[in-house]
Amino acid sequence: ALAALLAPTTASAATNQLSLLQDDREFLGQTGEDLNSAAAELKNLGVDILRTNVNFNKIYRTPRDRRKPSDFTTSDPDNRHYDWSAMDRLVALAKANDVRILMTITGPGPFFSSEKPSRCSRLPCTYKPKTSEFAGFAAAVAKRYRGKADYYAIWNEPNIGKTWLTPRFEKRRGVGTIDYAAAKYRQLYFAGY
Image (cartoon, rainbow, N blue to C red; front, side, top):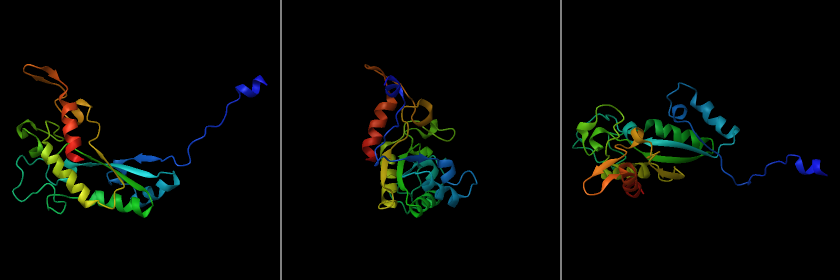
C-alpha cells in the first residue's frame, strides 16, 4: 500500500492551456532557414501562439536619423519610412498555419525618438524614449495589424538596464535617486495602450 502512495502520478494539464513560442531570428528571416518549413513545424510542435517583438528601430528604415523627417507621421503605417515586409511575412506564415499572433510593440526607436538624440551613438539607442513617438508607433502597428494580430503587449523587458531603457536610475533634485526605467515604462505602457 505504501508503494502505491509513493509511485509517481501523471501530471494533468488543462485541455485549454495555450502553448507559446518566440523565435524572432527564425521567423523574421534572419537565419536563412526555410520559413515555410519552420512555420509548418509550429503546428507539429503544438504551438498555439507565435510571439514576436515589433521593434520601432527595426521597422523604421533609417534608425540613425537624428531628426524626424518632415514627411514622417509616426502613427501612419503607410508612411514610406516604414518597412513592414518581415513582419508581414511572419503574420502571413502564422495565419497560413493557423497559429495566433502576439505582438509585443517595443522600442528602442530611431535616434530622433530619444529625448536627446545627441546621446545616441549606436543602435539600439535606449536613452530616454519620447513617449509621444512610441505612442505613434504603437498606433501604426495596431492600424496595420488590426484583425491580423490576436494579442498585443507593450514594451519588452523594460527593467533590463542598458538593453531597453536607459538610464535605469536617475538622480532628481530634492527627491534623490529614482528608478527612471520603471517610471518611463509606466508612461510608455499607457501611451501604447
